[in-house]
Length: 144
Image 1 (cartoon, helix red, strand yellow):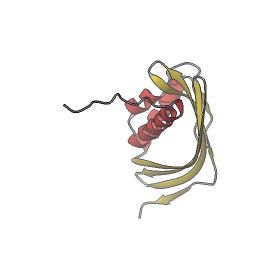
Image 2: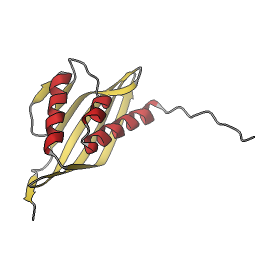
Image 3: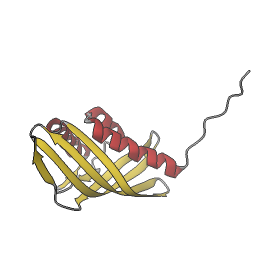
Image 4: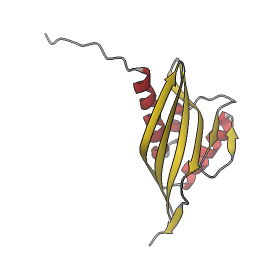
């Protein structure tokens, strides 16, 4: 009879990294249900998209993701310079994003510095704040 091994428990840093990866998978999926699954649904969550104003509360944050997803045809995010930290039940990930977005009339390619802040809940790490700042100007290229 084969020997069964107990599933390995992830370290807090590994589970935070997984939560951050899940956020970017939700972003690329353009699926609002996936995005809802990675965020806390509290009145005090916040989000600043690159070049945009502060959004506070889950309803505002959700509404903006809904509009982003409705306007994009495809999104790809490549991460670099990823740094993360866990302190108790709080964790944050700082990274550089290269976000390529396809629209019906062209493409945007942006470099963004982002900070994603998570809080550990019973169901795992949930995003409670995100701040993204453009590093260089985005260029929109018409479809040829």
